[in-house]
Length: 379
Image (cartoon, rainbow, N blue to C red; front, side, top):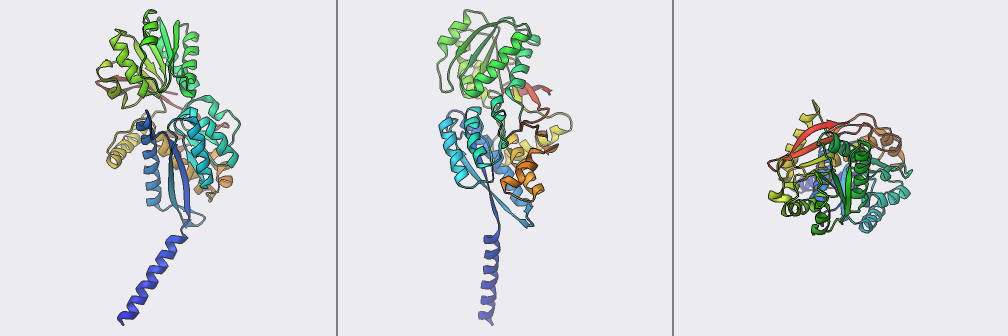
């Protein structure tokens, strides 16, 4: 009798193992810079993807009539275009069904051709350079507003709201930094503002004394920086040491929780203004706050910038798979392209014919007491 019970138990275990092995695994790639100067932003993105995947697996999503399991393949591009294309090819070779990323425009743009050639959908949660979705690829999507909207809004704000009379620009020569700085300048000029100088640095630089000294002589009351928080923080410190009291502006690359730590006591209240691509208002605020609470509980870290957009990107991709009843890119890609009013924590997502989000929001922010404070949501 005991032997019979053992045999039944073994058979049950074998059946269970067969069910597990038969379960379809759907691989989704994520790429961001999880090493280097903006690793805190890359990790933020990766955690947004992990949270989405974990929740989807807990729900027991059905595709093709059976419950599937999602597997996240996370790669580090270090914010470097060459490494970005290398890991993109690696994900293609690993047969991922879709990719969320990359974080930077400079890595997203070259990687997008590799995904396009393979027919694999790519949703960027944060690449804002307009070129990304204007290459004619049917596989590229993004869930945030682009630099035309971002830089333009900030440029008009500098002139019309901050009343900037002498405005200087610095950019880090990356696809993102240069792109947002150029759009900012166009908007300043269009609003009859005065750009008194444009200096250049890199995304790895730590010494800005020479370019800041050049700009100090021009007495700017607003300095715009096209780049990321890892450079902006030290730049603010060096501005203070030179006695430059100008308002400091930047795009979503500086609009992080980490900026106040990087700048230390060099950042005064209401000195720094930035715009984050995306934003919620009204009833949607509760959903975003709930996400931030859940994220903090899971990872013991505050949301930096883009984690909610990564989370939404994974979910909108899977929603298209479910609707198409297939995880094969050729089958769910047309459904993804027709996404209308997907209810994300970052707001409703509808893609236009280029793969850009329609009616994308921007959140204007300043910093008080070392914390980012929302000023307005603009669409």
